[in-house]
Length: 289
Image (cartoon, rainbow, N blue to C red):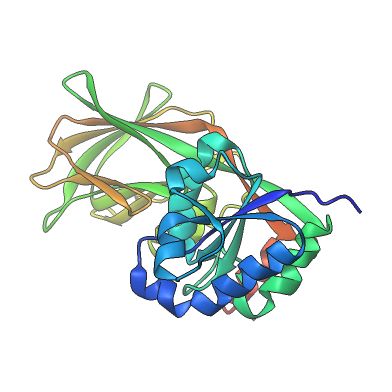
């Protein structure tokens, strides 16, 4: 059988030295297992250094995506979010091994990782495309910042409510006062948006969820719109507003700032073993009966 992947990157929880040391044995086992199958193995620089993995090719996260045709990420969902955004231009699929808490994205169990990886290497896998959203921050008509989010873009205040005006495709929806507002991809609806009372959207849906965080008016409910929509949020009043991307990048906002949200052109490709079922994952992670 033809080997579908000739070169594979291994990326651990690369910004956390302690976590890398804890998963050192698993990372080493995975790297040796792949090399024994005549696969060219690349280790992300920080992963190799702090997990003390020697004898393998290494590259920075910024460069490793151009050297491989698959990346295996070991860590939690936060690690996968960061790696996915970093490698988006390389268009390589990602496999996630869970060493975090929930593992909605890193769905392979560490104790089963070699068996699960072997299934993928023997062409027994399913590939799934996940959308991202692009957020552009405007101040005084000029672009202040632009970035991608895999889970969500969150607008929040500090100790006080913030006031926001929401427009969709140029049509006014409402003004609302709330602790914040979450703009979520279907992937992100099992993250912060879920705890704020938002709906779970299946990853195959072409939609963006708009979820208020503790709205002052209880009739303000979450809504979902087509992913082709252009969503504009205007910060009407806030003394300490901020916007964050996947909870990993933050920017302070001022009254009058506009946040434009729309679907990104590029997608993240996730690989799962052939028996993977999204609803099984939800049932296990959310302790459904």
